[in-house]
Length: 92
Image (tube, rainbow, N blue to C red; front, side, top):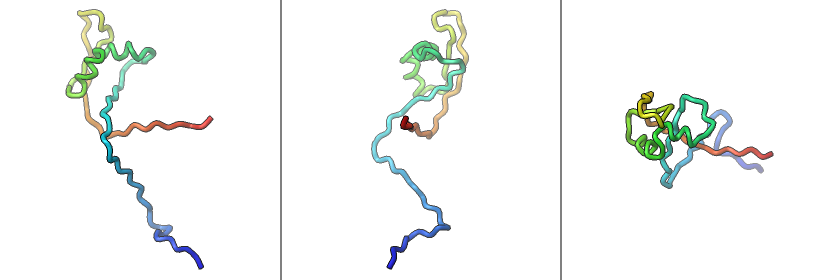
C-alpha cells in the first residue's frame, strides 16, 4: 500500500544541468585598485577597445594614469576559466 522510491537513502543523487543554448562570453577582471567609478576602471584597461583586445590577448596592460603618455602600465596575465556567473536574489 505504499509508493517505493527508486533511490535509497545511502546513494547520493546527482543533479546535472545541461546548457543547450549558446552562452555569451564574459570577461572577469581582478582590478588591483578600489573601484569607485567603473567607467574610470575601464579606462585604465584601455577603454572598450582594450576590453575587446582582452578576449585574445595573453598579456593585459593596466595603466593607473591613462591620460599621461609617459606613464608605464603594469602588466597582467590573461587566463581562461570555465566559471559560471549566477545571479542570486534574496526576498526582502
